[in-house]
Amino acid sequence: MLASAVIVFREVLEAALIVGIVLAATKGLAGSRRWVTAGILAGLLGSAVIAGSAEALSDALSGMGQELFNASILGVAVLMLGWHTVWMSSHGREMAAEMKRVGHAVVVGARPLSVLAVVVGVAVLREGAETVLFVFGISTAEEGGKMATIAGCAVGLGAGITVGTLLYRGLLAIPTRHLFSVTTWLVTLLAAGMAAQAVTYLSAAGVIEMAPQPLWDTSWLLSETSIGGRLLHTLVGYMDRPSAVQLLAYGATLLGITALARVAGRQHA
Image (cartoon, rainbow, N blue to C red):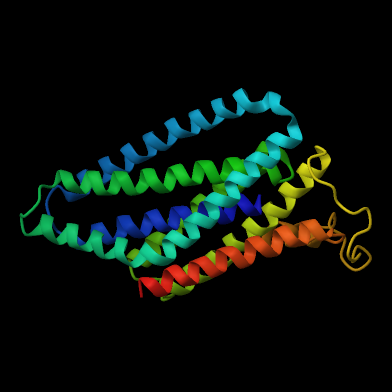
């Protein structure tokens, strides 16, 4: 539940900020709200189509063996989360600046109002499609089944819309860079935890071998099955009895995403 809530919150907040920038740039322009609303609805419709395609893909591949299927889904989710983190670190500011330019161009009459529907629709579709694919991968690792994932999505959706609205209205005095710094670290840790979980599935499928003895055992201090252990397992990938292969997958994913994001951020600074 927590993993899906974090991902949905991050994606919805990004979409809300883009919509907020466009609304602020075209404030007072007659008809602008209708076009923005049309763009949001079109983006949501496209995301729903992608959600249906993801479910169809799941049904088509479900015969490959549950462990291999779960490992494959988690692997794709890790790659996409890593790519998203790196891309946002290098293009986030450019995207926000572009939204402001589009809004200004519409206000001065250089571009038609319909452009608002296009840019907002594309933004919502992009974030919605990423949300669908991320949650699809996370649902493989989350405990509690579909209901827990749905509940997490609902929490993340509500929180993302609320925070985005408060930021737009100027009621929340939290710099967006701090918000995204926190969520970026959470997403990176989620990806590292999923990489370790994928290794576990591959071991169960007999693809790789894990040493029978764990590197350490902290189950006496904080069991992975306890409430606190589950919370940390979801948020930061905590393992009370990790193997060397799991720790290697976790560390490589964490360091890889962090290093690539920093390099990309410096190049576009």
